[in-house]
Length: 212
View 1 (spheres, rainbow, N blue to C red):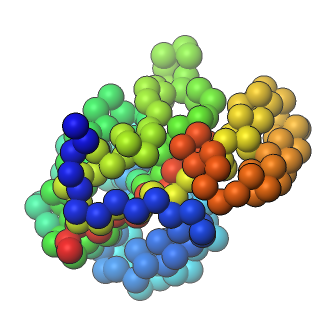
View 2: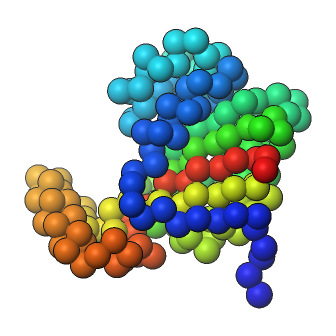
């Protein structure tokens, strides 16, 4: 039996990432879990939006620019003290992702929001030497719905659907061919229709609202 959630929506008609980050940037207190460095990765182009926010970058390993070093499974903040959370490409790198989800829910204010990105059909990107980050999990829409079941609203949007995701996996060792795989796969996925391949995506953007 599937767990009940107040509202889970699979978004197929748009990329929710830009609007999600813009909404988060309007909040007063923002925590970026697993940031490595402040506003890295896809957040770079949105840095100007955070000018009036108190943005805090957190990661498990020390790195220049971090505001504090901590385990996301035990966020060292008070209950209901944060307006918004960014959690991009972190949950596959922790041993207990459900604990991170619980901690996110705990530290968010009643009207708090969060953006999460997790991989699904995606190449291994841990450190096989056992020195750097681990790479433990992949997350389907079912897993995401369950993991964030305490939130009032959950939006899930597939990123790079089945054909694109598959071609990129095949070309993972050949970096120069990634752009070709991405373009060809995206073209085929679009021809197959909006709903085709949504449960075989390379990953998922997730928008979370704690309150109703």
